[in-house]
Length: 218
Image (cartoon, rainbow, N blue to C red):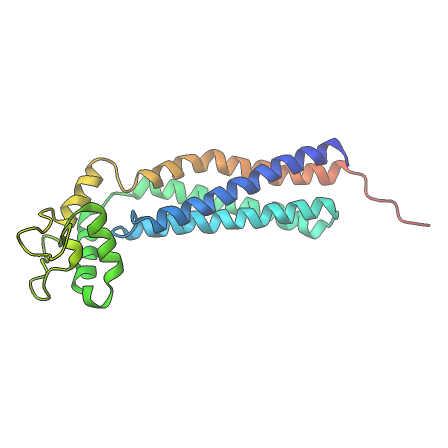
């Protein structure tokens, strides 16, 4: 195996590990409760996981393309990585230019969730327990009674219920740079990440052009 191929496999392995880290981090942030009250945050971490998984798959494709010397896999690797680089750059630039945290949208989303509490308790309970809040400015459970997650311990009554409203807790988070801080960090990091994607796509073509094709048997 030539030195250039060895360097490619090392850098491609790093690319695969990074993609796996993106995939896992997206899942972790999606499932730990941070995303429950912010639809934009949900879409952001899902996209991070999807792109991370695509990068892992492409790292495998690239490794096979070089090991088995299959031009079709090499081209697929270069083209898809280039497309991923463009995708994350466009996404990041769009975020930087246009994103503004919207506390009103988040409050409406939480109010809808809480009004549907009897049919979908899990998300609301997780949210209220995590932030020790109960209801929103527009909804206080008077029509259905206080859920257990509105209090530290049963029985849950107006005497021991959490006094903070969940939409106001969210507004305080936004004022301190959350919940968008994770997504802002990812978008800033996407610029060097995109450069790495493009660099690996070009590197694949360099490996292909510098290796002499195998001689055919006479």
